Image (cartoon, rainbow, N blue to C red; front, side):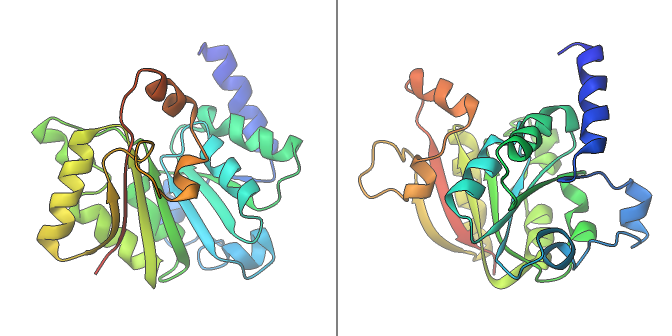
Length: 224
């Protein structure tokens, strides 16, 4: 994407009512007024709050919002020019139960209050295969601790990925740390009885992976 196009999207994001772009200082210094108030101030209801971390273009968040009108969804990514597409679609199609937050995933516990979130989706994250990149892997121990802080005690996390490495790494970590694996499948589209919300919604990249016959893996778990 050209820099002109990026700038145009950044400018447009600033006009969208469903996009929130707090500065890092605002989050870290606890000046972010939406922390603990997302449902009250943004969605104006008490429906379950669901996050998609590393939401990319935002199409998964938008499709989940359409499918589950009685839940509130927030797509989170540091790259605002990417989720511009999802935010714009939500406005054009008048989907009120989805919003987008531009921030780093490691600041999630500054953006949301303790036990504010019901569910988390992680869709097709970078597996960060090199050992020195482990700290950026979105299901490592440090990230899981942050997720546990914002999740309700019975909250769940969903990981959907085309990376067998990420799937295996996460399963190993979950079992090793004593977390509760509710469902695990290394090829959801080939398995009968796969959860419908996992197979009925596809990202742009996911449809490409499926065309290449790449297996899509899925884990649903609770952090203990």
